[in-house]
Length: 389
Image 1 (cartoon, rainbow, N blue to C red):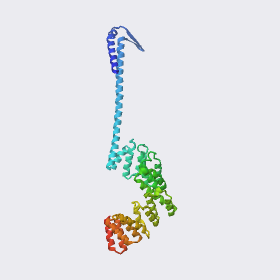
Image 2: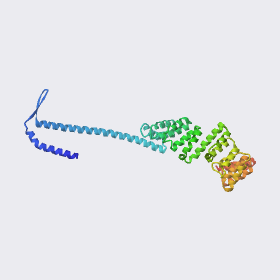
Image 3: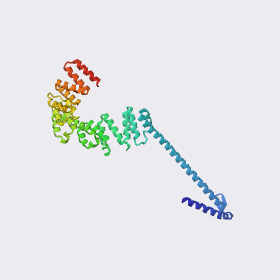
Image 4: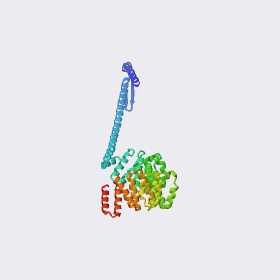
């Protein structure tokens, strides 16, 4: 539409020129211009030509200025683009060097863009490089810088917490844990470092209280953390309030807790640590009424009771149901050894060794032979245990 209007105007001007041009040329009128030092007389047609010339010159000057500005602007854009490519190349080169294990080369690349805006990713990568080059202080500084970038703050804080825990600075780690945004506190990575911080700082009861909320997120790791928390809580009770209070605390636990194998294992381990072997034996047999449990069965090795008859009876019952289970024979042999019944121990360990040539069983059998003054056989068994390692 705009082009049509311009074309119409041009046609009008041409026709006007054809009609009015001769009249202006033949017109005898003039224009008198009075100046400071004289006067100038111009014919009407001359004035028209002068004005037309000035218009053309003005239009040309405007065109030149406009294109000059455009060129300068384009040059600035080109220079910026060139600079941007250099920064991007340094970033890409650093990542590739880091991935290939050339940490010195990666450091050179990242040092050029340390103060550039890559949403903090360059700082995180540079920190990893410094960590690999055994420069944790520089890595710590880079992680701190990265916390100023919203997209990098989560990863930066996770690394800062791990660094603090490695330095046993649990107070700083706790401050960082508390500074996470609510949306980040639901992430598994954040939950794990939070649990690690609570455990390392000895806040076992707080950890125990928080774990049920994290059960779904932790998944298979939940049982591991629950056992750690229970062990820490029971150890704290035993050291501060005594072994009897430990047993009382267990009796007061909710039924659901006392049925949890992880909690049961933690409780028994603390009884064993307090050398309450008879109580530990009673607990292990009670917890395994329906059969051996993989979290509880190995703890029977640590029982040192004078009369392990009830434990031996249970093990023999389980062996009848699974007479090819080397672990059951091994535990029976060690339990008998701890109680001084070398004949039963030798018989059970012999069966375990036949089923599974285990180093621990061989060493225990060698100890039996030593007590029986069969040094030759003991030496042979020790050599076998070393070879089976």
